[in-house]
Length: 163
Image (cartoon, rainbow, N blue to C red):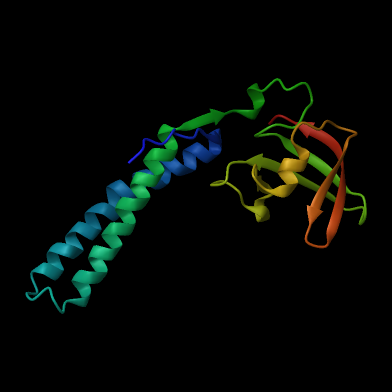
């Protein structure tokens, strides 16, 4: 098996805190409870037809997988505090941008975050999304063209904030 080059995972300060909190919950609550469930199911005898045991083992696999996933992400995380970025007004990872949709005239605000943090309802878009890729490197006054399902959408960058 070839050794994979570990990919650095950009995270905002808040994103890293959320992952750490989830990891803590998995290790201190989920892991012990799944171990207890396996022990309980074992005590019921025959494991070959024991649905509780199978379910608990499956849950254990999920919990351990997620713990490994989170530990991997956090160990490769590059924590970015937008307030400390000096990108001279350009849009970069962690930046919050005010945009105007030039077709509808609607104003939207997005923060560009890591894949794990993205939540469109909270205005957080993944750095790997088409809109974020179109915005990276732009400054206030620039127009970004985004290939959307319905064709090209144009957004004017109104403001770039490092918050």
